[in-house]
Structures are given as C-alpha cells and as structure tokens.
Length: 255
Image 1 (tube, rainbow, N blue to C red):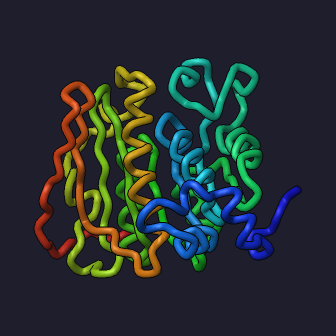
Image 2: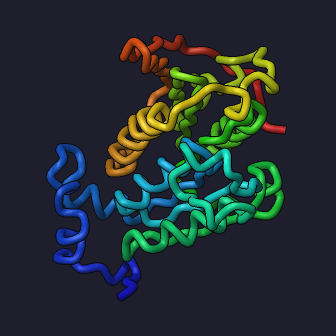
C-alpha cells in the first residue's frame, strides 16, 4: 500500500526505518526531518544510480532525477539501476521505475533533461539540496554557482579510475564559500568525463556511499551545517585526505 508521507504514523516510521533511527544524529526527529526534504540529483551514471538508491532507502521525502542520457550496454557494469532490458531507455525514466519500488514515502520526479535545460523550465522554491553526480565539468560549475546564488545546500562527487573527489559548499555563509570553479579553474572538459576513464564499479560505490552518508546526516539536522570542504579519495592506497579550504571572496556568478 502506498502511503503519503504526511500520513505516515510513528509506528510505520519505526518499522520502515528503525535501524536508521538508532544512528547517533538521526533518531525519530531526524527521520521526520528527512521525510520533509527535497533533493535534486543531477546525473544518473555510476555515481548517481548508487546515490539514488541510498537516498531513497534513507527515506528522503522527494527526489528529482535529472539525466538526458540513455542506457547503453557499456553502462551496466557500474550503473546499478539498469540491466539489459533497459538499453536505449532514458536513464531518468528507468531509475524512477526502479526507485519507486523501494519504499512507501519517497516521491520520485524525473526529467530526461540536462541541469541547464531543467533550470529554464522550473523553479526551486522547495528545494533543500543539490547533489551533482554528473560527469560534466561545466554542469558542476553551473550547479555549484546556482546553489550558491540561491543559498541551497550543495555537494558534488567525481571519480577517475581509482580516485574520487567529494566537494561541498557552505550555503549559509555564501560570501565566504568557494565554488567548484574556484577549486578547478582550468580543467579540460574532454579529459574529465567518466567515458574516458578506466573504472571498476566499487570505486563509484565507495565515493557515492561516503557522500550519501554525509548528506543524510546533514539533512536529518534541524540546522544544516554542511561546510566548504573537499575530500580526495584514493582507493588504491585507501587514503582519504581532507583539504583545508581558506575563506575566499568568490567572484564567480551563475550566468
């Protein structure tokens, strides 16, 4: 039976998300906070499909999925929402069908559009978080700057072979936060797409799982505290290095 999240009783919350409620920093109050949140998830490739599964299973209230791409055979070894029958289908449409069968509370909205195309047709009055899992450098710049301009909580993740990057920005003190373009001003777009990179699926799984853990704990709070930070993840050496970012007056704006 489908249940509207407003009608979910305390007993139903405990039954469906009871193990998660035991985590310090979540509890029943935090779970109810998650039920009220709306995330925009950009990109449904290796990172985005794994992230979509964890965010839905956490009981996020609404998730909007964006991806204009279609499923291909080469995607299947790492993009967990798809199988052979889905080839040539839109990733956003297939993912919506998969994710809607996971729980009784999360509303799934999908658009087979790029982030930039989506912005032209929609507003963000009720959006709590933008999570960029795309493989486009320009999209990451645009989503970062848009989130900064609108004071929306934001993070992005990227992978290249056995390495991953997690980036988040402070949406409260926007005058002191760095954007994605500040950190990576001169990246060549053609050499930073996952289709050009060697990759095994578990690398995407590790990076996406780490990011989702941070996002879930962040959205469970009454007062969001996501900071401006970057984590460099090396799966070959099992190292995670956190870079200390200096306060900077970012001059970049969304166009």
